[in-house]
Amino acid sequence: MDRPARLRSIVVVGGGVTGWMAAAALAPFTRSGMRVTLIDCAVDEVGAQATLPAHRDFHTLMGIDEHDMLASAGGTMRLGAGFTDPVRRAAYVHAFGDFGLEVGGVAFYQLWLRAHAAGQGIDLDDYSLAAIAAKMGRFARPAADKRAMMDYGYHLETAAYAAYLRSQALAQGVACEAGEIASVALDSESGLIAAVVLHDGRSIPGDFFVDCSGARAALIGGALGEPFEDWSAWFPCDREVRAESAVLADLPPLTTVSAYGSGWQRRLPLQRMTWHGRSFIAGETSDDAALAGQNIINEPRFAALRAGKRRRLWARNCAAIGAAGVSIEPIEAGELDLAHVGILALLSLMPDRDGSMVEADEFERRMTGEIQELRDLTLLHRVSMEGDKPILRVAGEIVPLPDSLAHRVELFRGRGRLQPRDNAAFGPADWLAVLLGRAILPVSWDPLADAIDVPRAQQNFLRLAGLFRQSAETMPGHAAYIARHCAAMSRAD
View (cartoon, helix red, strand yellow):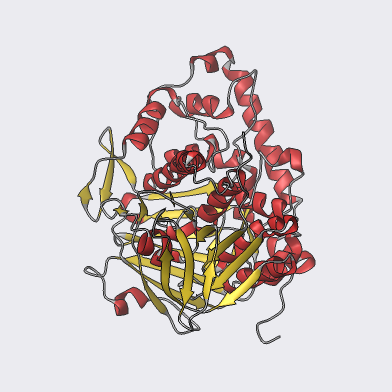
């Protein structure tokens, strides 16, 4: 059997942070003679991003020094997100890390469920090291073997982070062609993308193309016509105002998310500013009303929102990464997390020039599972108990839960069962934090918990609460940690 011909060139379209993430990840292929080119065209992006812990896998792949990156990107640590929803009387923290420790092979939260049903007023957050540290405003990088107990993501300035990745990519041999897209040339026989043509007439040919052009989806949508599956029935907000305010003195290692009308408002604490995003339905809220109460220091920007995904994320010889392929309300995971998942999948499934779609189909399978998980956990923040039923209300209307989310909720409501998935962005503790935060409680608990007698469990509760609090108190303040290890230069510098 003849060996399939290797790709000779890859073209990344989009000069934003997602494009430079993809280019930096693909840069090592240049060492084998492949040409990797990024077309640096305008992409509409938010001013700041909050990432999940899994995003650090991308930095590990790239050999990026975390402190150097944070100093360049004006970034801070993120131990989770704090949510408030006054209408549904909900206030909770989704912290990154497990709750407690197993006792005799029984999950800690199952013992907590039993104690809660018995009327013991035990706060589950007292057994989350990440939640305790976040509330105290403290941070220390956990040892590798302790990250199950406390993990972390980042808050990053989008443009500064993109500039950092750009320097990494260019230093490793990625070529950059600046210009706006005029047209996309398709091969007349195969229908594959042959080249991207810029306004000045330059033609950038390639064997494979990566669409990182944002919601515009210049290749996957514009050239290849992959239809967009609209998710506005679940995510109705169609507009967002983005603004900056002064730096927070205490620099909390926590994203703040508050319900706002039919949408949400987010606050991301960074070293050189505090970033705010407020999503809303344009037909319900005016731009002036959306700006009310925000103590901003810059000119606010308004942007259109549209949640959903392309039917296929890999069509012919093009893969869509980030917002070019999917957009989800970014209260849990933002575009960087979606991009990270797509880039890692693409790297592990890099095709040849034989036109086979085996890799494309596997890419779709993997991405469908990841996107479904991100979508469902985001939607879960809109679910509340009405009587004895979990109800999803969107813009005041009751909307059916996606089947995958309905299954998770019902599985948990029985005996507190969680549904783990290998290599998923969210683990059982993430789902538990949000389920309990939305006051969704099971009617019983795992029968195995009854093998642990009540006095032993109570003794364990007291011991762990003291240990976790003591551990958090030994950490430096988050602001002090940042100042010592990864302080950013001021914007004036």
